[in-house]
Image 1 (cartoon, rainbow, N blue to C red):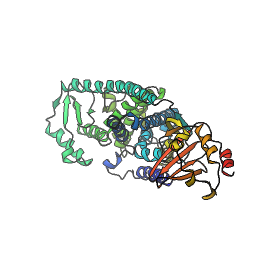
Image 2: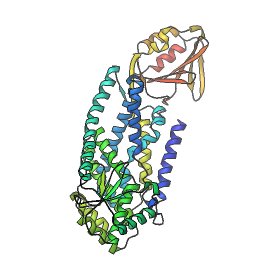
Image 3: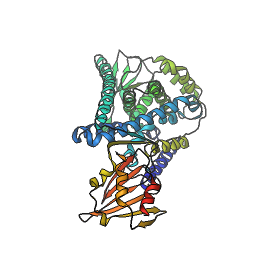
Length: 469
């Protein structure tokens, strides 16, 4: 239990500390720092898909299904609750806080393996699969539908990029290039990571395109130096914060949670908050004149974003709110406490709520099909870290009773759920221990641990009665 809570406490403290560091005195690059980088979920899903192909579904499907259920439920809770309180959140907290709330499911990447592999308590809900093949069927259907929907997003991005490339020209204006390089210097963009600058007659708004090979494209308009500085600052915030990957993550969430009614509205609102948070960073110490000029830039830039792109313009739904926020900003709270509490709740979801049980078998079959050396078998009952050892238990009746129970293997390495009764015995000079309580049987052999979930409650009083005979 200690490692789980240690990880959770460290993660929550890191969120609080990291969010507290952003002040008006922070450098432009520090202001852009994103707390919950969406790279995490993308990486773990790709890793699971690769391992699924290499290890086979029987070894990995339970773990992947467990993660998918946890991620889907977490996304449902985060997007649903954020949508429910969105107006209050936007009115009370700064835009970076609201933007960060949408990305909360990404914290599962950092702790999912440890938390789900070592639950602190008995999960509130345990999904039991009575047929192993159902894992494969559910997994394939889920991945197929998600894959098709996500592929549509990728194709949409590729089409937009190809259409843009047809009218894309390298910008050769030395003055604009010099100004662009100065702004990149201000945001500490390294020489080898400099972003190329292009122009296109098909655009009406500056657009940042790409996830890895990023480019900035300006429309063929005349801008003043002050306008260009605001545009460059806005797009550099997107680039440093990796909002292209965030758009990629939102498309993945929408495809992966296609059955979630909140996901479609939530991803649109999140895109709005991405721009609001960007405006907030650019205008952190701006005067009224600069804010009015920035608002004029937004009004003069009408461009629908497609694929994994970001641009200066606003959609019709958020235009009024965004302009009001730019021209007449309110004093809002830093949401470091809110984010820390929400992070704690999200991190505890895999530990407290969900378990996935599979590989149904008789509990008695766990005991080597009843082939136990009864002479070397000891039964003990834990009581506040002390043990009552029973010398003459009715071992045959106990095994008969356990043979009538159905046990499911569950993806975990320990369950802390009250006191256990331990059965310890030796076979071929190797010690084995089965610890069980009302719903779980934990098998230990050296460093190996397996946990089994028993759907029907184990009658602990009956077993203790057998022990005392």
